[in-house]
Length: 94
Image 1 (cartoon, one colour):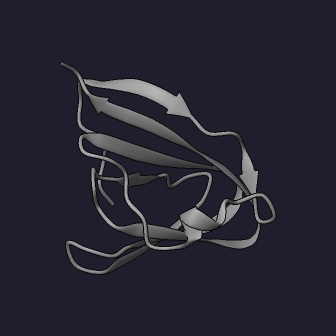
Image 2 (cartoon, rainbow, N blue to C red):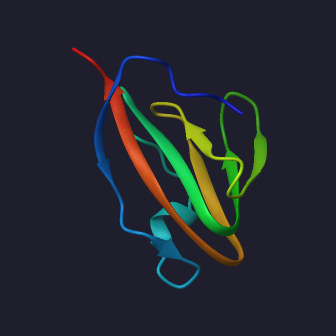
């Protein structure tokens, strides 16, 4: 799994999502904008992260394993059972 580079600025954090409230757009192929990194943090349960380019990769996220999505990399998530998670967004410092 990728890691966040040093020297990023925090932009925002999503609300806490669960298997019912997860936005449909996150479960379809999507990406962050230019220069924007995503950090997916699971508080309860498990979440499957699929990275669609740079080679196909699947990572099962849980309370001990967060996910990192690089700028403009196509990805999607799939809730696995009862899950609670949120996403933090960062960008490179100017």
